Amino acid sequence: TEIYTLSLHDALPIWYQFHDLLRVYATERAQAEEPDEAREEAITRLLQWYLGTAEVAADAISPRRYHVSYDTPEQIFPPPPEDVFGWYDDERQNLIVATRQAAAAGSHEVAWRLPASLFPLFNRRNNWTDCVTTHRIALSSVRKAGNRRGEAWVLQNLGAALLRFAEAEGIGHLEDALGIRKELGDRDGEAVTAISLADAYYRLQGAERALEPSLRCLEVLREAGNDYLLAMGLNNHAEYCLDLGRLDEAEECLRESLAIPRESSGYSYGYALHNLGRVYQESGRTADA
Image 1 (cartoon, rainbow, N blue to C red):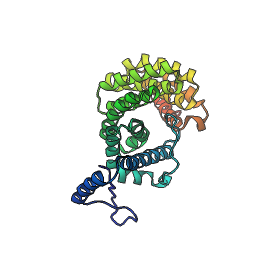
Image 2: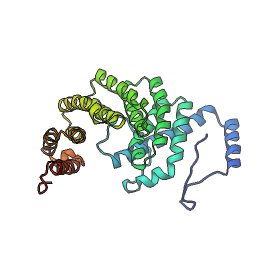
Image 3: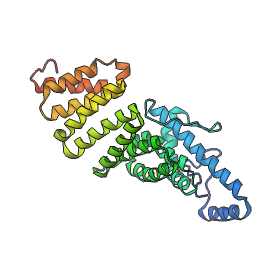
């Protein structure tokens, strides 16, 4: 197998790393002496461990993240929440190899779920090249697996990652994700993609182009009934309005956002306060700002 431990801590207990020549020799002996079934089972266990641990890690740093339900294998060893980033940093290269190997081995469920689950970690570490690389593999695998909800999730992540490089290709992926989520009646998923799509137009073509998609986004968000996402969409729309000098409209959005209970709106509450201060400042209301 191509997967082997890459520990950055040489003295870490029970972690081992092959010398390159020894790894090649061990691989040759395993292929010659171990039954195919035994080797496939060992690879499957390792891939499932990576997937299960990635799910736990993502939940620890992004408990409100979008995800497609998954039955975590019983025997996994997730990292403690306080060491999630240490685990990810140590295993980062292995996770890319695991994605490739899962796809090559026909374990398409792992090959698409692993990158999708890792998205919050890619985001926090700004590992967008890794994100794009693994999600291109994931897109092929999820289509082979025939999971439409998963396909939309992968398209959403891939589109968002490509936009970090100002790649217009990202908009096409987001449009496809939105279409699938509408088709499936996935309201939360549709709301997430609607936010991303409006932001994509903003990043690539400016506030004027983003305004109409953003207004459609707010309609979707209000229907979805997810306060966390609604607060985010309202705040984004207010920023587009601020750029265009539409201060009254921006203020209206921000007041609606701030009316959402703080425990529901999350970090958007702070952004809404900040942007409302900007509105007041540009309106000449210095004390209010």
